[in-house]
Image (cartoon, rainbow, N blue to C red; front, side, top):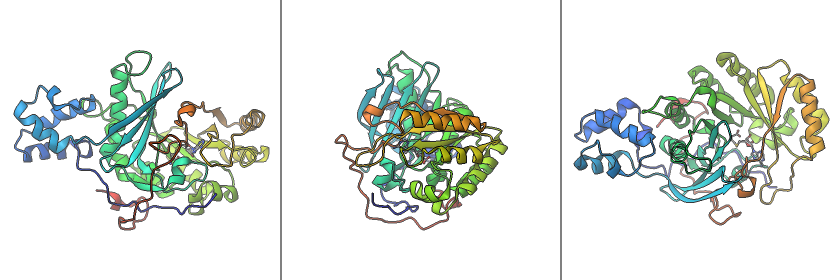
Length: 391
Ligand code: SAH
């Protein structure tokens, strides 16, 4: 397997036009006023948008003459469905989206008896280069705009409400940033997305803080920034190894921020929010699943406000790695629990449609990743977590 470089500076090219969902409520009202309309039309548009209405003709509380102008200026179609694929008896649906510049991303909606979760993408591709992850191997195409990220959640909420997923009409209850991309490498837009997810309807999706999970490879300055900003969503940290020697190879960002620093940052987050964080650990046969590593992980996390989520590795094309066999998984769980660490094993929803963790590659031909590395036209280099990634 060839080692890919870490990429922090997302190409600027390809960013989509401005959308209502990129704006604060005040900005949206100002934009509407500039178009010669009363400010309250911004609220009307937001109400339609968050309900998943995309056709201006359905916005009947807005005068017909104003609809087209407003929709054209503030509701450009940013996400086009290329295809849906379903699995798990119709309870899991993966959507491949085409963005305005042709870039492709995926989201996965999973319905359970007690909840419905959508897994959304925050970047087209990913620059973090984790060798076991299909997205990581495809490289970074570009950051998604806030509206491109929010739109995936809005579409999922509408699909649930409209009864598009087996089981009848329902409500989207959870959002996880576990699709393509490293959310904390696209910090400002992800933060805007959190605002939209948490703001009560009709100006947002009205989800609870605990039901939104941001999963990160471990960008320590950005975790600290999230801690200060008090969004209080659930944090998941992709650890995958308890020791720096192995983590340096599995999660290359570890060469910058070590296991101890990542765990310290997550602890500080838990202390501030009073909420447990998740430690994600993909169990890879004979790579990170040895009993001694379970003990090391147990020692690292004992007494902390953490919960380990073990993910038997999902196969990705061309990878030599495999999931840990069941006995090794069981032994790993038993050792962690013996150390007093809450541990669960994640189910593998969507595996047969390449929709499980780490399998999202956004290819139009099944199985062949088509996300090409762009000719870089780089945004100015900024330290991660700095304000400069604001639009
Ligand atoms: N960039 C974020 C989101 C990534 S996807 C992050 O790193 O946390 C969500 C989880 O799936 C991460 O923990 C990621 O490491 C894990 N993952 C990636 N590839 C996987 C694979 N092939 N099998 C199982 N889990 C995988």
